[in-house]
Length: 253
Image (cartoon, rainbow, N blue to C red):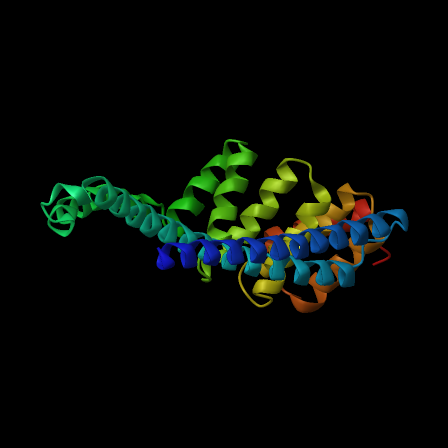
């Protein structure tokens, strides 16, 4: 019975930890929203603001990963406690039969353990490559919500180089849903994750494109200048798009 009570206390303590993490994550989200709103009011969503908000979002993702780990631990403890309670109830109901409660408890333990194969479900989970393929297919079909879901699943998993592609997919899916402010942040996050990677020029171009959509021309020109400075010889596709957005943003150069 003590082990059962200690298990309940452990669950309670983790619940309080979740609450604190939730409050912190909510505060970060509020700070991000306040920062973006300030930028909108002043007509200049600067790259520095994007960088700050990106840092807050990264910390939020880290906390979500910790919460997922705690959730798995709690589920395992709940399963163990449920088994203990069932064994105790069985022993209390049959303890007066004189047949030895411990002798009968073994088959019960085996029966309760039988549903455990349900835990094999994680094996059915799609890999990061599968999720990205499905997400890009959804993006091509303009199913932006599905693409966003697939990208977020990759981002919530273990860290890997594929998360850069997932972050870029997330930015594209948000842009497709015309959530331009969130998309600008996601594009800039994709750039920050690998500033010298293959996705970096496209990510900066995406930042500029979403800022043009927001009519924040000054910040769009900053993003385009950063693109030209860091990648003076981009792919022809990137160079052509850069010129288009410079004209739309009415950049001075």
